[in-house]
Length: 600
Image (cartoon, rainbow, N blue to C red):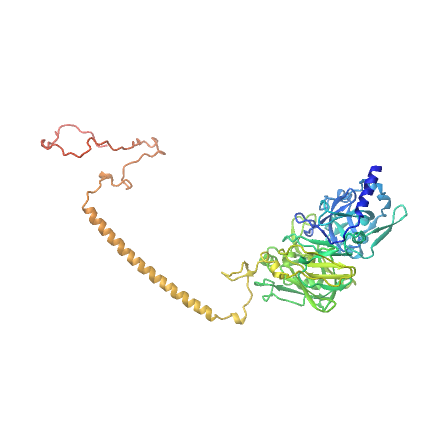
């Protein structure tokens, strides 16, 4: 045990060597995903020592969560059993981890809002263990690391998420806490002692690994592929297209939700203009403003039922009460057109300066999938979850579905929210977030949101021969200004008719001249043939005539009773020069009394 203790001490000492604080990018995967309600990108976070990589989704939860391997060993509705934790490491045993763990705690330990919105059930424990941060990489990297000993962790022993109709799945993906509020977490261990552990972000700051207790996040999307971005102590300017909204606390003021089409025709139901505002509703009537939370710990858009219904009215979706979600009607032609074109939702916010800012979320990112063990086969859904949060006193929430298209950052109690790019985002440009920062600079010379989606969203168009690379679709009524034919169009038609007539006349003249030439050539050939000896093929005619000589048919052979005709060769000339026959003999008639062979 002594060699292990010495090695553990050396690692701790090395981890605490003074470093130059700088932003720490954490790598998202971009080849495998998680979630039977996503798919979602994740990070690989190292836990324990020797470190073990575990799949986690970064969240704003108060505590990080890992999943006990026993949770999936005893349940068949676990989406994955890979990268789960087992309490068997030497470090865990050396530090008497089991003795320092709490008694069982229910789902509310993850937070009352989390447990209610997720439908979380089951039990877990508070534990204290090591977490390791890899700068610019993940748990499999060899880059510079920082050891976060005695990190506070919630261990899921069998937490599961249950839907109204009874479908459920056992959690198999953990959560990395990005919270810096109330840096320490305390509980009573099973042996009765009081345990205090620290959250990872404040611990990294105390270790002088990052310049501030801050983070930035853009969760990205799997389809289309937008790799996520997570940076501790800083942010990536390329993920911040617009000047951010700024708020104190965890809530933003949402003033409206709308529908729009950036370009091309609209296939929203009953909305040929493609634009509709005023969809933010509360208790069936329009709402002027609403306080909403934004976080990655929840998958859906948790909005009042009247708001979800108002949006769904224009979409090819059907509400499913078993999942409390809206399923896409995939047989409807408009479904594919909406989720592959610039049809999008608009979320309008006002900040501390009451300046309205809009964040666009294309329906390409709102075409998510329920999969096993929740459904037998992949089921596309629109992630608006009707909720009673307003009536119950809790805020609506915009979860991961929203953060696929939005950039969020936080330092201490100040929170930022901005438009994130589509798949065509610029290269990474990491900047520090200083303690006490009240603003963040957006990307330098940022492209428009539409440009970051160019080549991935195609306009819906019904115009034949259009230069647009859109898919065919119905078009709405044209405005009065488009109802007549313009002067330019008339001129084009006239020119086209003239050119067409000229082509027809030219073709006729060419045919006449061609026939004259053909007739003259035939006459000349006939005159020439009259002055030359004719080639004679006896009574058979030419070789390709109907009565031409029989040729050998290799397929027939002798089966049809015909004797194969041998190849005919020209006889050799007996004299190099032609000679006239002897004229000394008179012609004689053959005797009539001799028998002749019949003609065969």
